[in-house]
Image (tube, rainbow, N blue to C red):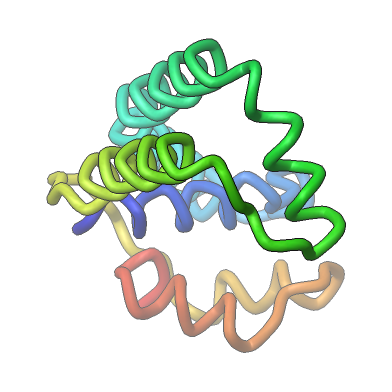
Length: 137
């Protein structure tokens, strides 16, 4: 699975209120899946943050000017080197999150998950996403 998918799954699972899941086995499996996903993403997140921090430090003098142009929906002119460096930083981050990673996932039954959904705001799209990547079978 791509790191970008692992990151999205981790984010979705992080919003689940685990104490509202009454079935202990389901709770344990979801927690394990979340921790495995989080572990896979952790190093990539740290690397992403290093790139962002370095970019912000290197371009701190132009950062606020470009942000103001964008906020005003004005063209960003006279900052060609900044824009090129920003493009490069974004490409590096995209490369990091497009890597394949092996994550151990144990699926849970849809019925076990839908019993949790009765009391929570979970969309059909979120359930389908979890099913597409093996969290729910």
